[in-house]
Image 1 (tube, rainbow, N blue to C red):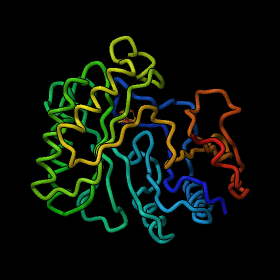
Image 2 (cartoon, protein in one colour; image 1 turned 30 degrees about the horizontal axis):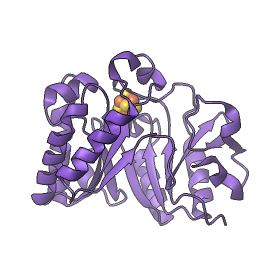
Image 3 (tube, rainbow, N blue to C red; image 1 turned 30 degrees about the vertical axis):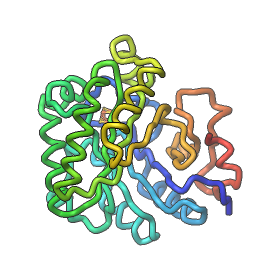
Length: 273
Ligand code: SF4
């Protein structure tokens, strides 16, 4: 067992999505997991220190296999199960699915127009997210909110902080707020870097301001969404499991690949920072 392996595993089930967000970092180049590959990966993770899985994509609810069935399989293996989703394709009664412990939902502004400029879904994604959050609050289901900080919404962070504080105060089970710094990669980010990119100083200042404004919120700075001491990332390319805190478009030596018949190596954490 590798005691240094990050305890949280994010599984990229496939690159597909029903949205076209301006800052999307997802590349189209990795493979969709088959259901048996996902189960094999869960089994491997269970043999290590990993105790939490985040099932994501792309959009996991557009995966060709049953995501709900996979959450049941993960629960049966005693993982804490999170689903990172854009919220548009959730099934009926999503807030009461027992095999999902927490949802991770995006919110990129408190006002609809700023959010919907960044996240494209019938010009109404903002209202979809607020409705999902309200239902999760009623069901007392935990939620983490993620925001991608770009040049277009950096001024909107204080208002999001206020909205989230109000959500918590009114009974919402808000676990945390993740502030991801925009990175100019992926099918959206690369194309729109000119209008979205921000400098490190601006990002750090904005994060400091929201922490100061609302110290009660658990805020995580994610200045590089592919590097974390507590999270690692898993996906398949052809038949091989890819492991690493590196985006798949970067040079291969920084990415570990293992065929699905092998055990996870003890040195997997060497690819995390
Ligand atoms: S950022 Fe937007 S387009 Fe990209 S995977 Fe997420 S919801 Fe889909």
